[in-house]
Length: 462
Ligand code: ASP
Ligand code: MG
Image (cartoon, rainbow, N blue to C red; front, top):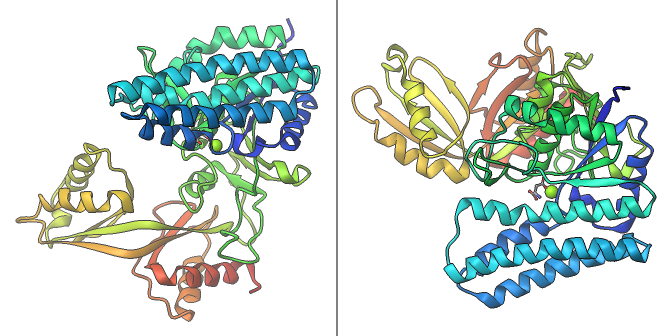
């Protein structure tokens, strides 16, 4: 038997809500030279519709039919615009009608019982992807291409039990998936995987959080040991700065896994933050492409630490953070403090975005939505060692990213110089903690000046 090479192609459902764009995707799939395994996410607005639909369903039957009408109309329209053959159209409509019925029953369950478990919620949310996959399969068939929907709660894609932010057990998945992967490759029928969800060991549906289909695609690429993961978005995902903030921001052509892993936590979150991990371990490159500029080079993410002459590849920001500053003259002497704090926060499901510490201070950077609660939790530790805890608001974190920045003399000085020329006061900085990133914290209302000054220093032009 000839062993075929698999390439995983992931399409953002957000981009496929018009027939024109679905045809672009179908073209890309059909002209792929390697064997394509497709991963898709829900069409634009459909996950939001289901999220709202769940909230509105509680105790209000009438609201369920409203949600279901919009869900039905939207998908019927997309199918109608993009499938020409009557027989294939009717079959697709029959398939998605069954799926919509199931989502409807689940929502009525919520309406009658006025309550919902995390597992049922995840199950309802998964329908956006299930329906989108059926429509894409219909369009492929309409274009003479055999394909098959593979629902990702039926292939051993086992996760932990956090239903809204699940993490995949990669080794177990690979073992479970081996047989399916062989079958898929042997039949040669193009698989369309539903992104965004997996299941617990007991078989309950779990989701990966918003944009989670990127992570699915990476996990599927790992499962196939694919030659490449190609992710199609409808924007230019990785740029030297946020183009809404910096006018002459430009596309980044190459990134290492480490640089990309830093960047996905910033700005507009170009990818689901866990996307890099599964493929990085297997050294499968990721190619990020823009469906609206399909000839464009896109961004290649791979193992190699490619050092730009300029060193810096991107200046990005996060202004959705606060800082909690824990002070005490004995902090440096007391072992296990950071672990204690991070355990206390983790117990409440709070994630620490970054930490910077010295002998007398531990600074925890926390996302705004968790900051107030974190402050309360940490205040319980005030006493002998912890003398004072400050809650620092209205700040923003700027990350300057590039392989080689710690090894090249003068980079940090150039960053600080550019910022100080703008008369911005840097409240905190961390250099050398990562080989590819320097973080600085500035007042929120000076964020734009800061980012522009650093960008200009390394990329020129106003
Ligand atoms: N449909 C999900 C969302 O809207 C997952 C995804 O798009 O990747 O977040
Ligand atoms: Mg999406």
